[in-house]
Amino acid sequence: MPPVPKTPTHSKVIVVGSGPAGHTAAVYLARANLKPVMFEGMMANGFAPGGQLTTTTDVENYPGFPEGIMGGEMMDKFREQSVRFGTEIHTETIAKIDLTSQPIKLWREGEEDNEEPTDTANSVIIATGASAKRMHLPGEETYWQAGISACAVCDGAVPIFRNKALAVVGGGDSAAEEAIYLTKYASHVSVLVRRDKLRASKVMAQRLLNHPKVTVLFNTVPLECKGDGKLLQSLVLQDTVTKEIRTQEFNGLFYAIGHVPATALFKGQLNLDEDGYIKTIPGSTETNIPGVFAAGDVQDKKYRQAVTSAGTGCMAAIDSERWLEEHFPDQH
Ligand code: FAD
Ligand code: NDP
Image: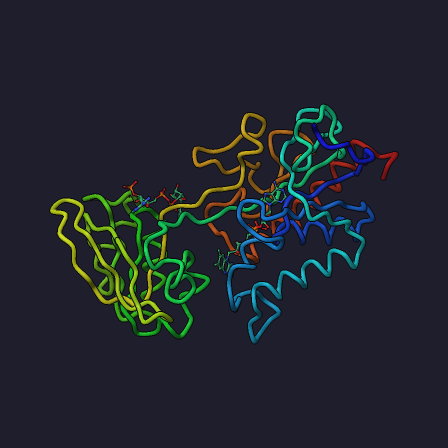
């Protein structure tokens, strides 16, 4: 039997997602007296409320925290600020959405089979984020964030990587960018490419191949991560052509094998690019559906930082506020 519907609730604007983008949008909307409702998710897309930063330790590149701050603590502060200005937060996941109706209909997890949802809104801000692809190698769980990372810009500067041999897996633009970035800290960077060619754009590939501190190991994949139980120390590598296996010392392994934006919910309704990211009108957070705005990693495959997510969260709130003012002036 489907669950008994809760009392139907209409909001001017609902925020789906609770990372830096969602909370920044909520703070701006709440301060504009729009009484935003946020669905922060219940382990949605594999993340606790607060998003990707809840899975990391020190965040050292978010302005305003000169000593750095733990990712989880930072997201607790974001949440506190949203609540302080009146955001109503539900620790639930949105499981189904009809963006084509006005008001927009949103079904919470467990309610998907009900004909009508509990929640409707005139405007929706999508801030559901993304997740880095991982390889789930033996040893990966043990050394995750103890030598293994999926974000060089976030983690590259930490002391465990200084003057050490580091590896980047992947052959795309991200791998090239991350490897070159890591040369600032590493003694040497090896890029593990599974085929005999790079996928990266010509200019990035040339930059990578010409860099004195980078070696590109073609036809190479990592098979296992090894260490002393606390920190990563080496990788078991395989040549994909000869199948030969060897072990090489590395103190860092960075995944750059792509990201997956959390957009399954919106397929067929929103315009997505070839990698599944929500397409927004350049210079704004507008999607192809009026009143629906997207912010953060779900619409950004280039920068993917907390501060850029917060920036687009602010933009989405302002875009939504102006849209509501224009289309629902009586309620404003
Ligand atoms: P996310 O942080 O991805 O959050 C999205 C949230 O929405 C999640 O909580 C998810 O559960 C929720 N959600 C998804 N679907 C639904 C749904 N259907 N209903 C309800 N909720 C939903 N960036 C930096 O700037 N500095 C760093 O030091 C840094 N370190 C990082 C370390 C790690 C290990 C990782 C993985 C990332 C790091 N980043 C860092 C990148 C940064 O975390 C992201 O750029 C940022 O969190 C993206 O924010 P977001 O708001 O777009 O979404
Ligand atoms: P891509 O999908 O372009 O590249 C992923 C790379 O990882 C490919 O080389 C792929 O190999 C490899 N790979 C995937 N899975 C595995 C695996 N299991 N084992 C080993 N290798 C694997 O992702 P990116 O994140 O690099 O780029 C995404 C998009 O963002 C692209 O459009 C890119 O151009 C863009 N971007 C642009 C930047 C810029 O302009 N400065 C910076 C970063 C990204 P294979 O080639 O064999 O499939």
